[in-house]
Length: 128
Image (tube, rainbow, N blue to C red):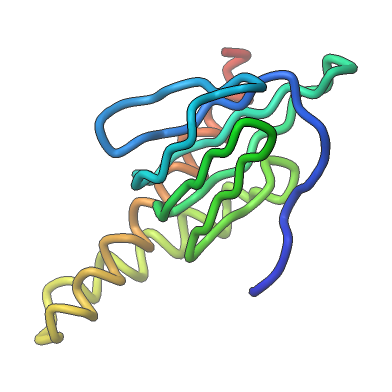
């Protein structure tokens, strides 16, 4: 799916950087960097918390704006543990077959996305 997943004013954004997680507040120094697969945590000025899973990608940070570009981005509210586990199993079963390097990279990304969804759902069920 192409399009906007979330937009609005924020107090702080925490991102899964390629070299480790980091937070961004208003006035942050401009930065362009890679993201690894994981959750973007957003806190609005009203205290609302929004989580968006990204499969990796890039983030552009300007003093008054954060833009994330990702191949896959799914809001926390839209995650489905059963679908995620089915997708992880299907992708894992394909890894043994003869595929191009690009296909293997896409499958690994799909497995990581599904695993993150499954892990998130498991944490919700356990109350953590």
